Image (cartoon, rainbow, N blue to C red; front, side):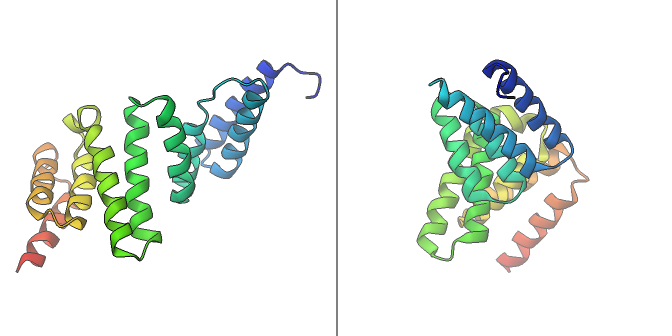
Length: 176
């Protein structure tokens, strides 16, 4: 590939990265997108591959790395609602899986709530899962009434949503 143009290499690595993701081979996909990033840096061009790399780390459950790459991407594309949502969920998962300090956990969950709330107009109209996700975060933050409202909204969208039913029942059982 040494004699191939940077543009051809970038297109090839991007394609290989997306194909890897289609086959759920996120480690390989990340490597291809990182190669794209390296090519872009050599030409001193701003890169947007951080979203793709963050997406791979998200699916590998490496939320710390996902947060780093989604934040880099958001700095360049602050209105990308998909990236904001994944960044918010990554923050919440980081808080739940990697943090023991209560203050740090609260900070991460609050950050997650802010990012996910910003994506409401994009995801919320017909997406019951969005409201369950937001409800979980609100419950963890101690906002029980808001969590309940989220679960009820999810059930209004999809009355058979078992996850929303389970979360609502859990919330009500905790209140007793």
